[in-house]
Image 1: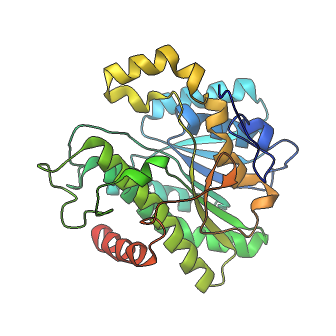
Image 2: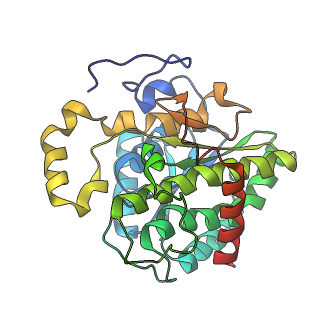
Length: 313
């Protein structure tokens, strides 16, 4: 993969795999939700968490595919505790239905991994008339987090174990539109750029984690919220662009992370004891990393929070 791979303070690097960064960690007392767990790094995250004993609930848009991935994980990890529930992040009704179904099960919730995403799609609106990337990558996860937060707070209190919320963002958060979040132009087709819109949604993921971390700290709740860049990975995120997809398939394995390496930072932030108590940070290659000036803007984070609360109300 990488020709030069320098270890950071965590002693892990871009070459580290999800299994390596969680080696020796016992997650058998934990329950996790992983969105977008039917492919790519979401599926690998679910597999490795299950390998470490975590009870994993896969949030999947396609239930049939989700069940196939579940069976594959069970073949690889026969002792896995893993289930799949339908979840379409682009639909607020689906998000509400998933959260209602989950809460009705009476399960605890220690880890919420907001992983699902789409990338650089042609302009489209969701069922709720929200630009599709913003809706899927950010708004759906914002609502899901809000609807599950009471369950996480109750779990943290009863189990006396720290809850962790993880937003899978991207380095592309540094390449949003010039204004960062286009509050008045979210659905503006005329000025739409697929990659900039993707960057906007990923900037929103970072801002959401930062603002949520501030709220949780003010409430003195033992739950952390962080965001991360998984790395450049050869996954089906590129399926909207046949030329790029072809290039990725041809040379990706030589210059990009594989899925096992791509899931490493997510699994590290979710399970590693060195992350205990750390909140409102952004990780890359299993180490705290720098964000853009827009992602560090507390005023922008607060404005986005209020804007999104009105959007999902």
